[in-house]
Image: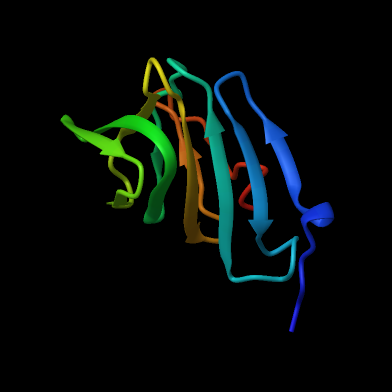
Length: 124
């Protein structure tokens, strides 16, 4: 049974948020990736899509998720299932920001509107 101590978690900082990898293929040999997202108040991620489903649960704060032309307001304790291949954008509450736990199949690719595809560092 793989055990991952807090000291082994991997932190990836982007201009919009900090992702902390809790488990992934390269961290514990997991077939699923699990990570924490911490986004400061008012920050917004870029528009993108993922080729895999993701499940987000807000631990603290609030967020708005723009998903395929729909807007979802999330509060602490809420969970949303984001389907694969649907354009999305995550925006942190302007006063509180948020912390969330996210899980998805390992190796999922993100794609931007210009067609760039990448496996984010927190998922590998």
